Length: 433
Ligand SMILES: NC(=O)c1ccc[n+]([C@@H]2O[C@H](COP(=O)([O-])OP(=O)(O)OC[C@H]3O[C@@H](n4cnc5c(N)ncnc54)[C@H](O)[C@@H]3O)[C@@H](O)[C@H]2O)c1
Ligand SMILES: N[C@H](CO)Cc1c[nH]c[nH+]1
Ligand SMILES: [Zn+2]
Image 1 (cartoon, rainbow, N blue to C red):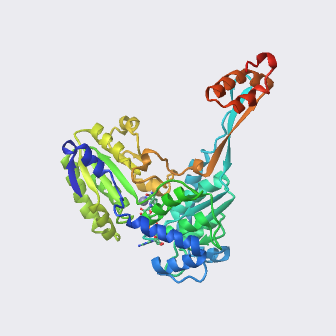
Image 2: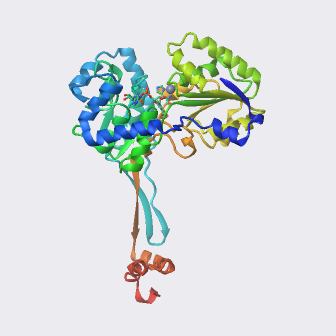
Image 3: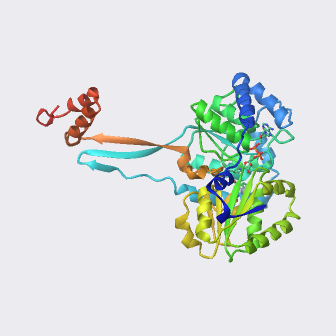
C-alpha cells in the first residue's frame, strides 16, 4: 500500500485518489451494452449462452423451483441455520422500524396533505455469486422487500459449477418464502430483469450489489429503460480512520476483510502518524499469510493506500471527499467525529466494532453505495422498496383559503387553465379572477 502525506497532496491529487473503478476506454461499458442487447434480442437463449461463456456452466433450465431448493437447502447444518436465523432476526428488527406512518398535515384551514407508502410491486434482487457466494446479501435485500410488501420478487444469482445455487442461498430463499431462484449472473441478469425474457419477468426496480459488470449494467438500464435501480453498489471498499488508540491488528483485519472481496476492492487507511501506518502494515503482512483468499486481497491492496494526516479533522476532510462505502472510526473519541461525517454509506464506531458485524448480522443493511456515490445515495432500506405517494384534500373552507394564492401564481406563469381550475370552485365574492 502506497503512503501519502495529506499535507503534500494538491486538490488534483486528492481528486485522483478518490476516483475508483474507472473504465477509461469504456471497455466494460462496451461489453455490457453488447450483453444487454443480446438478452433484449434473444431472451432465455442468450442467458444460457452467457452462463456457458462467463460462468462455464451448461444450463438446461434457467431456474430452481421450491422442491429443488428444499433438497439443496437440506445440506445446511444446524449451526449454520442458527447463524442465518440470528442475522435474519437482527436485520428484520432493524428494518421493521423503518416502516412508519406519517402524520397528516393541515397546511392551512381546510387544506390537508399527507403521504402514504405503497410497495413497489415487482422487484428484482441480484445476489452476487462470482468470487464468493453471498447469502448475507440475499437476507439484506429479501428482508426489506418482504417488510415493504412487494408482491413479486424475482431473484437472480450466478449458477455454481454444478448448475445450481449453493445450499445457503437455497436456505435463505426458503426463509424468505421465495419459491424460485433464477440461475443467471452478471450483466445478463440485470438485462433479463429490466427487459424480461420468456422465463424471467420484467421488474420495476433492480436491487443488489455486484462486480463492475453488474454495476455498469444497472447504471445503463437505469438510463435506457423504465426499470429503476437501488444505487450503484459495486466493488467493496472501506476507509479506516485510526488514531493512537487503534489496535493495529484490528485495523489490519478490517482492511483485509474488504480487500478479500475482489481484486477491485479498495481499503484505505487514514491515520495520524507514520507509526500507526507501519504497525498496521506489519499486521497486514502477518494476517495475509494465513488467509485463503490472500492472492485476491493482495491485488486489492495494490489499489489501496495510506494517508497520513496531521490530525483527525484532516482525516475527516479526506474521508468526506472519498465518501466511503464503509467508514470505521478506530479512534478513542469517535463521538466527537460523528457530527463531522458528511459522506459515508455505513459507519462503524470505536475499536470493538468490526465492519464484518454490519456485513452479516448487526441489523444494518450491507448493500451500500460505492465509488463515492455515498455523496448522494443511501444504502438499501425498506424505503428503497416503497414509493411515498402524496395526497391532498380540500374542504369548502380550504378551496376558499388557498384559491387566491393559486390563482395569482397561475397568472404569474401565464397558465390560465390552471387559474380557472380553482376559480370555478370559488365563491363569486372571493373570486377575484
Ligand atoms: N457495495 C455493496 O453493497 C456490496 C455488497 C456485497 C458485495 N459487493 C461486491 O460485489 C461484488 C461481487 O462480485 P463477484 O464477481 O464475486 O460476483 P457477481 O455475481 O457480481 O458477478 C459474477 C458474474 O459476473 C459475470 N462476469 C464475470 N466475468 C465476466 C467478464 N469477463 N465479462 C462479463 N461478465 C463477467 C459472470 O456472469 C458472473 O456470473 C464484489 O466486488 C463485492 O465486493 C458489494
Ligand atoms: N462487505 C460487503 C459490502 O461491501 C458485504 C458482504 C457480504 N458478505 C461479506 N461482506
Ligand atoms: Zn464484506
